[in-house]
Length: 161
Image (cartoon, rainbow, N blue to C red; front, side, top):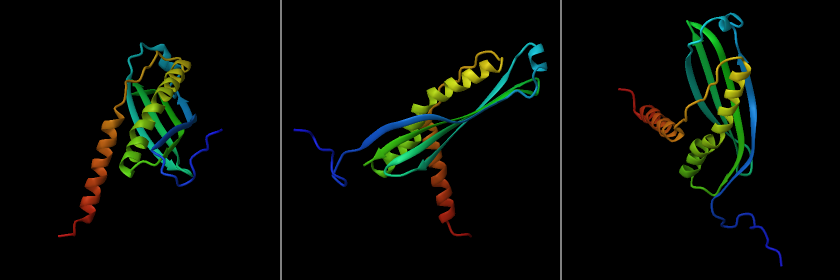
């Protein structure tokens, strides 16, 4: 006897699955090479991290983790790396708040090691010293985003004086 999959609409518990991880977009710019390589390199590195969620179909979501790393040396751009690491995730039968948490925290956390590796490889291939990105607290970023959205909604709901 074989087991049958749950019927559509059956009261299944929360379902989470990783369908695919892929590199959506990538770029490396070294606008001041080769001159930048002739100096002792003491970079100032800035990191920007953003996430976006796109609902696809049938409980499938694309989560895109965008990382931009800008390294400057003596006021000149040494390199600029942009990576969009994406994944398709199945997220179903979650309460809305928990689903938001899964898409806003858990999914980016799953993508980050892949994006971090892509950035490190691009920087090395660009001829620069190894760059290892520090861990990112996606939980704190998600809580901050929710707080900003709530403040914006509250101020929009207040009548003009």
